[in-house]
Length: 475
Ligand code: P53
Image 1 (spheres, helix red, strand yellow):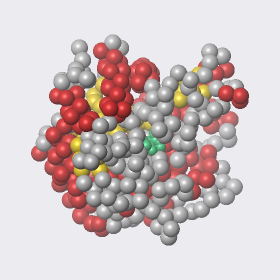
Image 2 (cartoon, protein in one colour):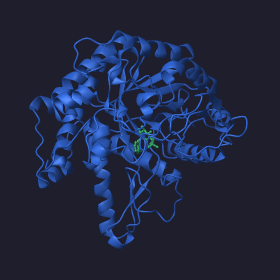
Image 3 (cartoon, helix red, strand yellow):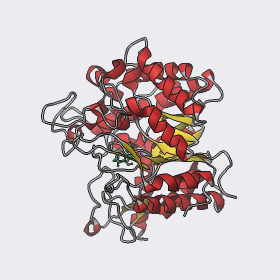
């Protein structure tokens, strides 16, 4: 009963949301650096502006973030104190290849992550590495158009070969692309896509998706060739779409909505484009350029495990009168009358995690790994800087309970759980600091003011005891 003995408990971050040091150690600029906090965060999606560099009048939170670039030893020590078995982090592509298309990597960048991994290992923490977490070098966007260009596969191949070779023996768990399905919702953050006027955006998005899928299969192949111990996973922004009612049209609409996301994982896990997607793309007039070699590569090099993020479930209706939307976020959805929502309008649904796990396990029959889950909330420290975040503990407890049911009662094979933003970091969706997820408070605000001091929250000790009891003690 319970979780496996070697269950990988831990926390997750992404380079651009925590490292800072945006121009340190020879690092180049990436798309994730030039998105400001505030309303203009994603102007490129709306097509109003093309901001591919820092512009006056904006605050760019990724420049310094929580400065983990200079604090990682202190931060990993705190993770170790909580008992982390794993730490999920991402590589900043532009630390390794500042422009993206160089032949030789930047040694300073490689050395930085080598020391970080060794620090993890010294505490018995297994690194879980996301190769790209929404980041794309600016140079590759300006010069090649980002992932719309097939050449990106070569640049990515160069990156992964470098990483797998250099970190052999230090890193075993790899994720090829964070939330690969996000390319459909946030194409600039997802794939460095900037659209031209009058362009068929769907065509471009799916061509770029194909390039990422081929690159992912190629990375899986190379990882296994370099070291058969390597375990490679895909990564889905999960969260099921519920039909608003039992009206058959609603049920079908929800199925179609889920398939938009499953599409990517179907290719990465089953090794071929699913029929429903081929038919739909055909109806939409989308023609993906692909070769026989691509198809053979996809078929032969599927992932070892399925990882995903889960924050909320969503609702689909075909009734135009019922379209009251949740608050602004990339996955805005119809309001579910049975659920409460977070301060940012994300609908809190622990049982939805169990349902999602079952849906994924039924579909793929491969081990799952929950690599993001958590509550973004405003924290108010007391005079000593201490945060009593019972709301966060409640959220995590209920989700861990549901995850436990999926394992114990449904028999889902689950490798581990890394909660999102184990230390407070910059929000990907909004660029805010005040949307906090951490067990560790970081003194920094939306304008970049603060001492960067780290303070344990109440949830720190709670999570420590969860890990120590392998998920038995959730009080
Ligand atoms: P934030 C929505 C919007 C942007 C990124 O999100 C997202 C999602 C939710 O699926 O995905 C992940 O910071 C992402 C992380 C991100 C986290 O959700 O907007 O992988 O980078 O921080 C939480 O609250």
